[in-house]
Image (tube, rainbow, N blue to C red; front, side):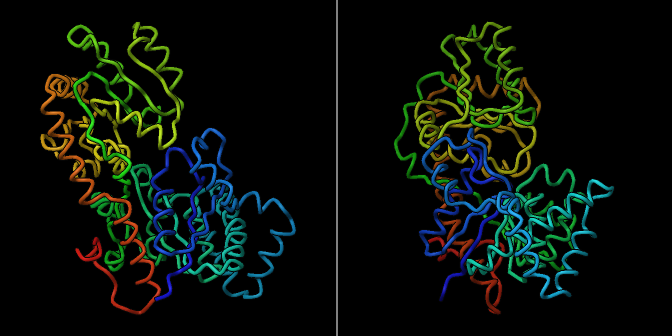
Amino acid sequence: MTLPKLAYLTGEYPRASDTFIQREVAHLRRLGHEVLTCSIRTTGAEHLVGPEQRDEHTRTFKVIDAAKHPGTLIKAHVTWMKTPRRYLSALALAWSTAPKGIKGRLYNLIYFIEAGVLAHKLDQEGVTHLHNHIAKASCTVAMLAGALSGIRWSFTIHGPDIFFEPHHWRIDEKAARASFVSCISHFCRSQLMCFADAKHWPRFHIVHCGVDPSRYAAQPDHTGQRALFVGRLAAVKGVPILVDAVARLANTHPDLDLRLVGDGPDRETLEKEVAKRGLQDRVTFLGYRSQAEVAEELAQADVFVLPSFAEGVPVVLMEAMAAQVPVVTTRIAGVPELVEDGVSGRVVPPGDTDAFIAALEDMLRDATQRQTFGAAGRRKVLQEYDAATEARWLSHLFSAYATDTPKPGLRPDPELAE
């Protein structure tokens, strides 16, 4: 069977914080798919932290950059105007799905303009299926590109923020029009089901974000007191809880140190708080790091900490578990589907600083427990969150929806994982 030629679209690609998308694309290419990567905006230099990002950035089609050329923009839309009924129908869709107010209408008209340019590029490249990640503005562009050109399209929905404003982003309409929807967890799927007509539910499949376990094959020596955080330095991640934990555990755990990989709007505030509490020697801000550098940090970590208030299913937890690093995290969204409390880590109520610190202290005191949890975590990732296996499942979905054959179920049959 000929594999569909794919295009992948996000708002910014590649980004240091979305390495799971790069892994997914890489595995699909290894399976034999041609994949054209597309980005609405041009990624900032701060995200090009490794050779993988720089290589992908070079080969990625930038929609806004292309649309800035009048000749490209006019040629694209004139092409679609040759089928006026479809063109006007797509324009009406942009208008009817726009958020309320003049600003919302204006933005959707801009998305329509971008969609024309994107659809023309996909047509020129012979792409037969467009896939979007995130499901917000870039997914609106994907939906309109599908309406303009008739190309099959699908999207991966993550959360949690998309579910804070489901009507603004019209996830009901997107779910109705897409060939299928890839949901990162059962929890995520259930949230989409709240807003979508029940007749569409069979097309909502579970496709886990995944990691490459081979990057983390070595058994680390979890006998120290190093805690590691990887993520955006933003309010939703709960990083002040970690700073508080280091301060409160300083006397009982004099060797405890915390390393923070990532950047974001709260970095300056967090740095000031660390200085105010005299923790500069215990808390290190590392900024963004490449995938290889994150793997090196995990190899030196004894505990991975993620006190988030809202998440989908954090890929950084999968990376830590693949590296056999025990995790302390919070009971939100799809996290309990990945981390089982008392088996592969500790899962505590979100926002409960005392519970988080108690779980961390318990982990720091017991090296045997850390080894046991770390081994269990890796087994879980190998079974359900291997990027290569999930890419095979996603490839199967792309092919299945290109034909009139019976459609797949919620998760792949066991033989597909072989």
